[in-house]
Image 1 (tube, rainbow, N blue to C red):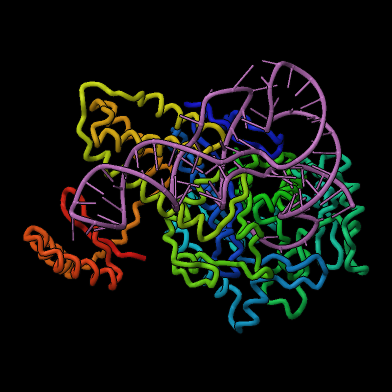
Image 2: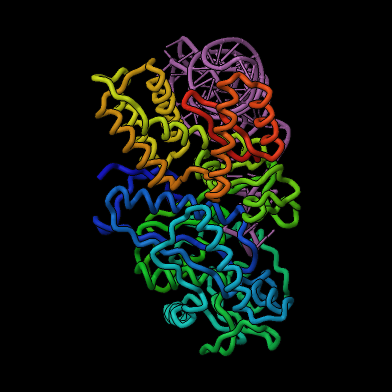
Length: 488
RNA sequence: GGUCGGAUGGCCGAGUGGCUAGGCAGUGGUCUGCAAAACCAUCUACACCGGUUCGAAUCCGGUUCCGACCUCCA
């Protein structure tokens, strides 16, 4: 097994990864709240941890990857009259809350499929684990870290902090938190402003509700992940992932809940992907730069010059390290599109390469550079830079400026297959039509043009070329004949 | 206001105390009937001011600016 280093938010450092159970890895990642269209912000963690999931399997681990679907709705705000998002949407549309959740779950799955994000081992629904959540609350109350007031149950952060460290993950001090947190509601049932809800009493008009020992209500917003990770991965598991915005309070609360219930802090490694910005600004509904994945795929948002293939989005995300912010713009995406094309052109050339007796380039060095970069906290941009170096070698070999032995060509083929296809999950963009009739017609047209060129009938050849261009079809002449593709 | 992170060439984005990151664009070239496509070569960097050092874009201090979290968020 190679030495994989990953950045652990708990320590703030890169650490050597060792799994609790040698042969297997258990990981949990916070999934989407399904109350709206899947957007760019959903793509980054999904892709980041998809890469980790694939890579761990590649290293030989048996991986159990749990990514939840939050379909019970989070509270809209800290105030007590908390409506939840899914319930609100359902009311607005006059449908069952579960219709909302199901509709957007389907949308999320469709987008993930297009982005070639592998489906996790288990994708549990929060609504399907109300019983587990209630049991966990009972345990926390039994252990003295939660209290019930008027049908709601709150986590006693101050008491917890006397024997544990609330702030261990986000490096916050409880005193600062208490100073800073605004008490919006003077009538709050909470003992302290830093306390958070484990169970909320449902008002009569609140439509998402379940019975509990404390009356009808719904679970608090941090509990589901604790309950479900514990159920499927145990009290202690290897990796917990999610977006950086979840570090506080969500993941901090998860650790507190797990310690309060099980006396164990859940995960050994906490990994967080950074955010996506658009034109240097955080993406948000209120900022008017909120772009859904479908809008990217179809090019229908006003800020987009063109449609972007899901693979371009995926490739672009991999061109940045997961802990850096990444800025989306038309220029950057168009650059990524061309880069991706270059990468796959290289693979195509690799598959048609003629071998020599010896190699003029050290291919095994190149391979180990890729492996080292990947093992260094999943440095996908560095791996890609080495793969582009390889593309340069492949093209040079194609033009007989370099040489590669047959065994090195095999190593390269395996290397590209491993990283590009298996781990990065990239696929060539097939803009070519699958319409066989059209393909046959195009074949005939290209033949006619080729004949015209042989007879030096440039007028005819150019008329065909220019005419097709107006129909958004581009002819590409190569040494081995002509082919075609759609322009954008 | 508190806590944390960042500032790299026209754009995106790595990395590092001395040795070309990479992609895109630009420029030059190869190919081509001419183009396009493809391929090759190549230019423009490390926010500002001090300090440490033989040497700093990289370490330290300060300044400015930007962002994240603290409130729903991926």
